Length: 198
Image 1 (cartoon, helix red, strand yellow):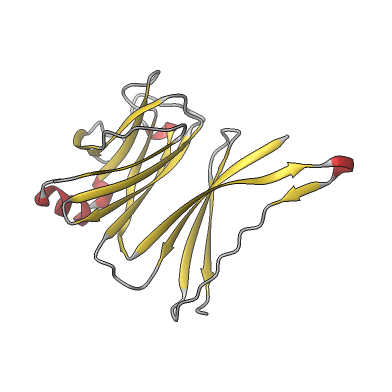
Image 2 (cartoon, rainbow, N blue to C red):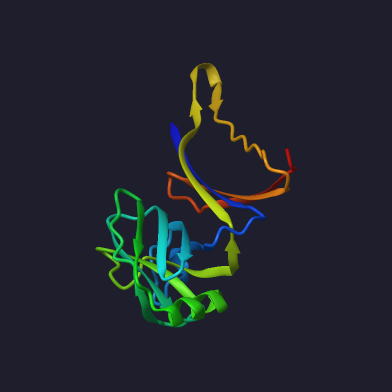
């Protein structure tokens, strides 16, 4: 049986590039009132002035219909702050929202944990997966989403495995978060690795 895994890598570099990026780990059990129990996801939100660029990757959802940023802590039903007007192709949505009010951007970046991202579906219009914006804003970060075939069962009990290699050509140590999303709908898993300079 083929297993496809999506890797989401967040490269946290030392240099400040003028943008601030937040990450979000999404799951159905965080939705107030109940979301999709076996679904998960990952998102990055990059703020460049008053423009918000986003990438949302979901796993185990059928027909995602939209996503929005809400003001609210875990367990609270919040109010919409930024409608992302996300359009999903299969399980991936990328896009941007222009002219987010400066005061709203400042409030989100000052207290990311007080805001959450929620993705809706046709069967769960009030929320299928949800996650709080994580940690402090990460200046100079990069994200790579790589759909890969990670494991294939071969003949006579053999297995073919994909390798992930991360090279660091900079003069600074690199911290990398790898998030795995099995196509089976199982819960995502993550690993943190440090790549020495050069």
